[in-house]
Amino acid sequence: PGIMGTFFTGQNCRNNEEVTLIRKADLENHNKDGGFWTVIDGKVYDIKDFQTQSLTGSGILAQFAGEDPIVALEAALQFEDTKESMHAFCVGQYMEPDQEVITTPDTGSLSSPLIDTERNLGLLLGLHASYLAMSTPLSPVEIECAKWL
Image (cartoon, rainbow, N blue to C red; front, side, top):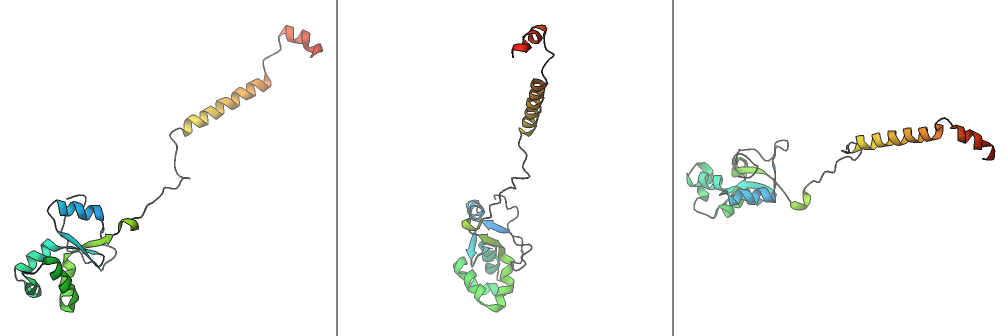
């Protein structure tokens, strides 16, 4: 759902180079499309995968079967022996809406679509001013009236 692609990647949330940043909109879209992600201590966990693993009775997670999945996940994160296996359900790091990085482009590197037009207009105005400064050759009437000017 949304732009996230695969849902259960099994990423380890402690490896900061590979952590996916998940925005509130991504979380809501995933949950609307039938997923079940929740935020615990700033990390996003896939509750659906956790619930499936705990219900199948695989290892330590079987002790949390039948409990509310969010409460069970929070409880599982408290035990040292389950912490390592819980990282498999971590989808990424939650990014608060006010933490979103807004990048502003460098105005020096931007190119205006009218930059060529502006440059050509400047050239034409300069050529016209030069033409007016040099003027055309004087006509006979101008030469005759020059003594009065």
